[in-house]
Figure 1 (cartoon, rainbow, N blue to C red):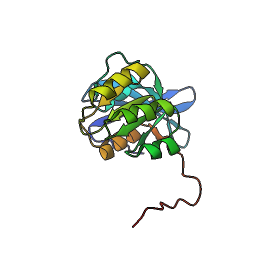
Figure 2: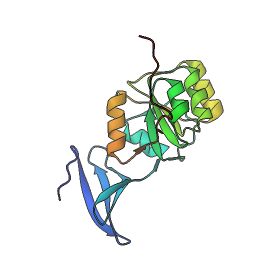
Figure 3: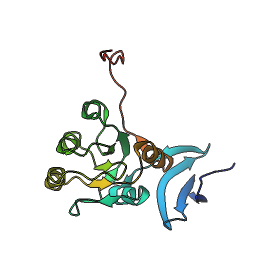
Length: 174
């Protein structure tokens, strides 16, 4: 069995009867416990905390008083806050290109663990103030949404987007 992960290498060891893998990043010299493999080497997602996520996405914490120990169970990437409210599950991180206070209001209502702004975006002062008030970590990452989603998924963070109910039609005007 071969594992390929550009820029990283995997360490394999036996743990409580299961085959486990730790991803060790050569770049930052820190390990990310994110995946375990059981018997047939099927990868299962594991959760991590906000502090680990910040390191993985080369993020910059914008509101310094935020609690970084909160567990993150998965993620969601969206710019339409109505999609976030309709599909995200609690304890997810939200990746978005929107920087207005509505992002934090949505994150608070959806019990989001942290908000990551893509492409190095910087939020409005009102957004920072609201994030501090609500205790939601607000992070800026230099990567685009597509790359961030891929990096986090590759590290073992699962999608916390629920499927749409109904027929799935968009009902957009043409």
